[in-house]
Image (cartoon, rainbow, N blue to C red; front, side, top):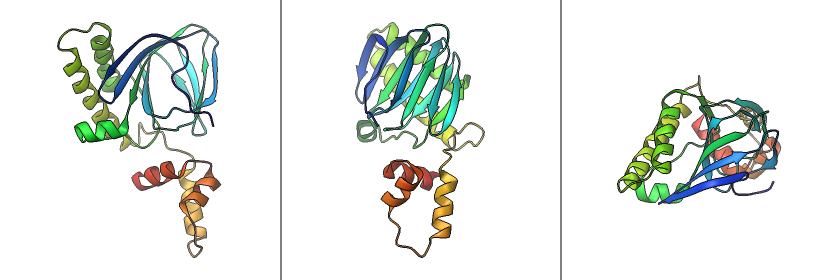
Length: 203
């Protein structure tokens, strides 16, 4: 797996404590091979559409789609027949926890429109047209975004459930007498050990 930064053409970037925001443009028909990001991030599609492959799932993303990726989530992207413009918000989990006593969800999430899209629209507005109060506004909106995503994490109607969760359950049920390690289970289902631990506890 390749760990990489934001790909595409970065139009502008802004930074706040524990947060990096990018406006990114991708060419029509562009594809991004399987890769992962070191930090958790949220992608908000503003114009264009794309199909994303992640956690064994195919996600069709339209304008106002919001996709949250935990750290080291491998994914690939195929942009549609028009240029794609996204607002990307990277989150440093340790800094967010230290500074705000907040945390990001542990699993892949996708939401189309609704309150999360509204928060990201407001966040993009502060990012795009900053003034003396924008830093405070951005930090407040990030906390609102994390709270909303964490609530979505518990909502079966909007949560993207990793297909390997049931397989972990089967392994534990069938081999409960064996001396299994987290690393062995993670290798069996093709996911990172820390991810398996966090997601399995949450689900």
